[in-house]
Length: 355
Ligand code: ATP
Ligand code: MG
Image (cartoon, rainbow, N blue to C red; front, side, top):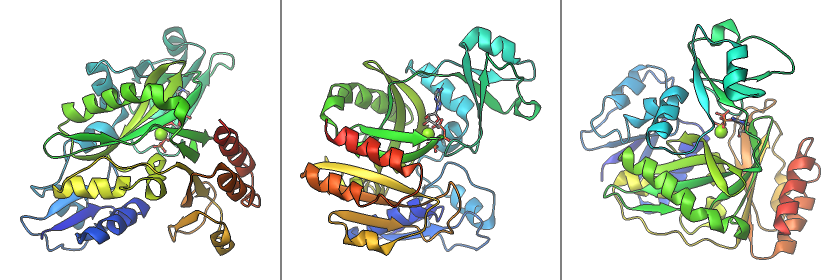
């Protein structure tokens, strides 16, 4: 069988490779800085774990391969401007926005978008980086170096943040995981919980929105859609043309994880609806060292990314899946040594468990 190359060798690449292993797929991840000459065969397949990459000997070789799945979609979604234009074209609800140009003033943005305006760099933002709030009550200007390379969004007073992960196969068939409830603190994902009965009424609408996007892009593989829930409406925050942090719980809580589904899709293998097991929780490990004592917590699954621990950096995650709510609650209590703001994240999870 041909080889599947993954552009990017971070944790997502590693988990894609791990998920492909039982299927007997031959997967190689490639560091984005690699200057290696890769021995690519004509019938190999290329996918990516990230939206953007620098130009190197290795990445150029991958990005010019005829079987790079979704190659056109990466630049379109990596730029928030063209991503927002796509949402508008498909008439999908998203936070009202404007491009930030040389002429854009904070005053005009407040007139058009209201009291709270969020500037977002068009490229390269993640975990809340590349964002800048403008508040009419504390007048300030659009930073000079943001002009021409940012968009401005209306600050949304959402009820909560949810996301949906879907997969589309080569013949256009689509499957979805249940909506996931997410907690972001300072723009970074700390915790997720899925499925939640009370979100089920929004599932069909979310699937329809993501299907519309994937079909329009003739997309193959896993895509994630982050949304704000405002009452009974969903408003798209952003899209990711790849496996997504809010889908990590599927490693524990679904018969087929988002990682396996992505690899199946790009390899042209059959897809099937994943069976969802009980309820799952995911806790991101952000700027904290690994503690192998966690492994004595019943039901806990540790993913440690072997990255240097730095403040605000995602270095691993914990998954829990159980049909026994008491077991899940106990597991969360045993994580009480995690530093601030984990107290907030853990009590958020506990609170949502009891619903
Ligand atoms: P990711 O790490 O998911 O790629 P990101 O840093 O690229 O995230 P966003 O998802 O756009 O950026 O924003 C991060 C968080 O900031 C959101 O999850 C949400 O909590 C908050 N946020 C983003 N846009 C808005 C908005 N228009 N109004 C209010 N809050 C927002
Ligand atoms: Mg996001």
